[in-house]
Length: 312
Image 1 (cartoon, rainbow, N blue to C red):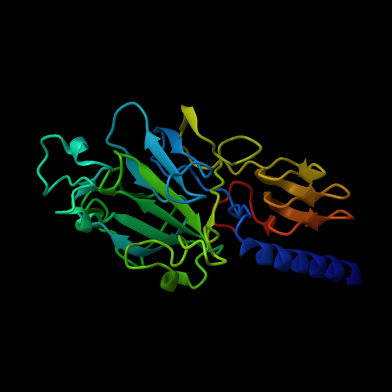
Image 2: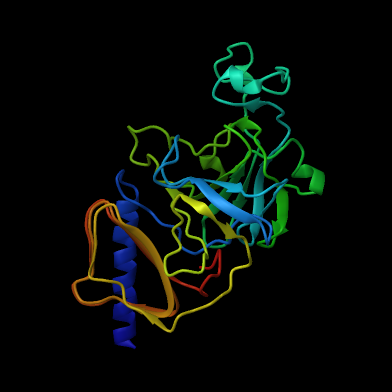
């Protein structure tokens, strides 16, 4: 029993150190669990911008349906709807010329001062049991409330929230998707739907409330990078490899999310500055001797079912 308590205390200490690193700019936080692709089953989906290339902020991702449409957007995990904003009507591309013949009541280029102040996104924020929140942006007007969804509703992963759209600050139809750990729950989300202070590089929390989304994509690592090839949206398979043993060093700029029934890190497993790792084990995580997380690195260990979005 004493050995078990010692191991638990060591893990708690490691997690506390990781949380301290998480608040520093330069770290690469990874979502605790894997989330299903937030499109209705059978939809082919590609990544237009990944967590490294999103034009406005790090760790967020732009997804788009492939081959037709309209496309239904679904909850990425079980959870509670905390915010719904879907009464905005303007599409706001980067310049007025993209609007073509559309009237300013429907389309307003961001370079048009006459109406650019009304360019607001439609979005939904959901809270999940693991403390993470997910955000879904650019819904068509009333496509969420029109389905009967209300703030406070608990819905299951895979439930349709609304349709893919382009309302607000968007180049075209797509889903802007985020995973975040708001520091103060709903109070951390401003009136325009963005995380408070997250865009201010003078704060310690700059881009650190958002976490790199890890998806159940059928591979070892759930991190989705830009790809011209589509992935077919489906329920998470809840598949669990017997064991996993992460490599000794995770280099700067690298990020991964691993899961298995049992995870045992090798001796001297080290996460360098600017690297991030999230481990999710169904049974246990065993930290080998010499485990280290460097300053501005990120690490989390999580117990939960494999490919089980929102697990603790």
